[in-house]
Length: 388
Image (cartoon, rainbow, N blue to C red; front, top):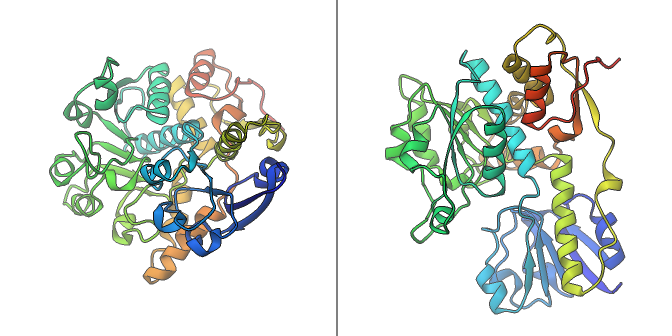
């Protein structure tokens, strides 16, 4: 079992911890992996930036492909099946992190627009691991939530709303996978007509797949006299060559990092490691727990006498403020196209450690209703004492 030859994206964390017991590991930048690199390789481990298809694998000995991501639209799964190449993804690995990102965006948007967080209606498009988990958290904190997921509805699940109803909500969160063909195609699901219909008092958050939104049409809407909806984009068409003018226009522009929590990244690596072990018929002897630092305190100052939702807003932005990541990306947009692409990938590669809310212990929240609300939003057990 020690003879496997593994080629992996250099940005997959925990590679040595998880995979060294199974073989030798070589790493490359994900966008740089090409067919010539796969000579003599048994196992290929990628992220969403690597297109895995016949052109890449045709003449290689690769027999297992693992992607440490929720999405699989970068894998030609039909080719992999026909070629007898086993593949695995990491569904749900960063669902909590993306939910954290969306909650912080909602806190920022309602602060920017001086709106009531607790009175928002939220529409969710796509209710898989990410959207479904977000729906539960938003419902738990008492918001009105509508969801649209035609494939799940067709499979017999209930409680869904029409797309038009969802798109009329105060806030719209997009978490649908990218499906290019068929009755449930999501490519440009938000097309010119739907984007033009968005109100300026709405909130739009896209943290699923870039081409679910017609980026050019959205750019046009944001240039309208009313400024268009408050918009946060974490995913883009043509990454890393994103539309710089659009990125400058949106309220929050981030470089596809919504799911980039420490726990989410390691969970993805653990999931493809476990899948490879099952494929090989060996027992998995590795977990992510030894790689995780202890839960950490989160100082939420000045919330002793505020109402629950303002306390939640303060905690969300103390835990993660997407405006800070947006500033970093927007700083890179003045260079030429090639420089911007390099900068986009560099921001992803060097992204600082971000903990999931479940590993953060809010301190200084003494009001029981506020403490309960923070727990419902996904934070670890609240402590009333401020850390030193």
